[in-house]
Length: 134
Image: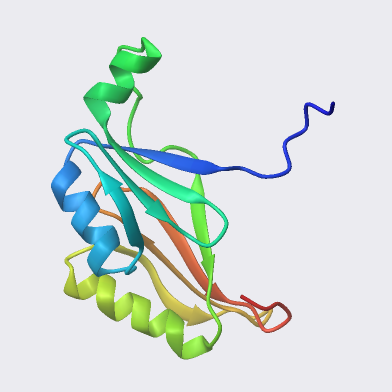
């Protein structure tokens, strides 16, 4: 039996503004929420789950006193099918009051990329890459 997993099953993001963050993922990204309790919401993406958990609960469960400043050194990424989809995400994020870190732009190497954040400051890279498929 190999200890190397076939995939990552879930990404968990800590949230101090739980309701606002859950609503952001429902409204802006239109992720499919499959469950929610008072402390955690789970979204099904195609091959992975995204869990939003109240930060104080995750601190208690991990026996840590703090996480340090958000965002951590992690960027989550979504590859879209068309360059215009990047602009649509930027429009939705702005409409929801989410911060745009770097507006959508065509990069010299070919892709169109947007960097934005959720209400907690978790950074998302949303990009169209002409050499790949979403």
